[in-house]
Length: 257
Image 1 (spheres, rainbow, N blue to C red):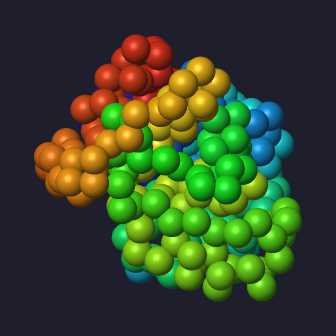
Image 2 (image 1 turned 30 degrees about the horizontal axis):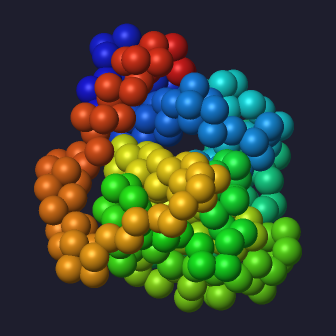
């Protein structure tokens, strides 16, 4: 993540540099989702853990469109859903129930994305879920878990079951509901989600066409994730693609403060 000097200078005096950097990158991710059309009015969430020993994370203010999210108005909450930065904005309880459970259980889940896109929700509503028969779904082979629908996610009693369903995998398809990605970094979560979204879109498109779908052989499926891993290594996995998207969309960190 390459912050401009202008973005650095706009950091609030009482905030450390590490938290400010996460706030800016998370705000940029919200803007990227808005630009790509992956929004659901004021609903759904992208959360990121605040650096430090406390189990605090950042979530979007409930009531704002993704294009209105900034580094400063992101709400810092603890695992109990309590606001820790004096923000006057409320937090969506459904977002708290899902995200706090995974942040608390997975030390590697620094960024969590949950959406209700048309393609993602459609695939989540199919009995067989995501099929590994296209370029993008093959890249995710062995990385996808499932969680059965229990209604609107506002009951904390569901949290242990959500965590158990996800296990150690980076992707959770919430049946009859939507998609979820949990990764160590914001850029990595974005590119993992992008791959999942593309896989779902292609599956929806092929299912609308006449004729049988062409399967991918088991050996190719088994080999594909390792080949893709080369694109997910380095000091900031997914960073090149994420930064390129920000440039294409005209999203600048200094405009997100």
